[in-house]
Image (tube, rainbow, N blue to C red):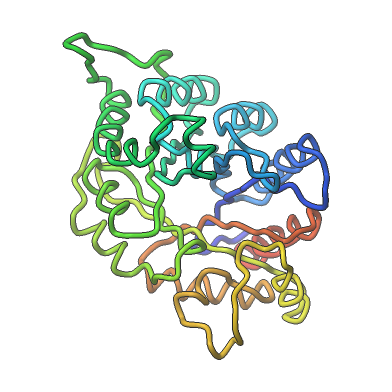
Length: 315
């Protein structure tokens, strides 16, 4: 198989489609991870959400532990674990444990969204906005724990078990604020284009220009998260994209859509989507895209990932 310079990864929101139960949805998450590994995707990440009937992952580390046991080499990560809800020690302990179980395969992706309603956030961790304001302090704790130089009230504390290979640290976001955090703390950055109507060039440029090297990442590393829907024909891809349950529903005609909004969701045949990714790669200066596909049919969703891989990696 001949590879291009573009790397592909998977972001799975673990959707609950067509009134299936959570066990079925979680089984489909395993199937997607195994398929992605077989096809050559670089990473499989899962997102954290709370009290959302249509999404089944509330604990990224629990699901990743299960999927790690069902896969062999694909990198596994959170996209994102919502840091304002948690203490840094608990977060790093969990991901150190994962990295000890699956050495060299674990990514710790952090975000600062609530992941649910205001009431859910209060029930989970109290005053969420107050916790968001503490984001620099929380990130400082996470990075110090990952680097083995954290102390609390003058006492050194280690997040055990200490893995043979530390998790990769990434921050996810849709604006310059999140990019600034990633740059300040020497982490990788994922621009969430699929959630943003803003084009990412300036955000990624700001991240690279202000990046502070760290032992976690000596150089800036960037990915872009985009929505993709692939099918054998343009007509079928558009039909799948028009589903009311897709996250990427866009209003108005194609002529009325702005370019940044168009970048949220790439729809078409495998070759046309490949071309769009190649153009975004040049525009954003990235070679890895993390793909989210919300076709409300598990088999068609899986097939979209298969078609994209075949287009990108077949000679």
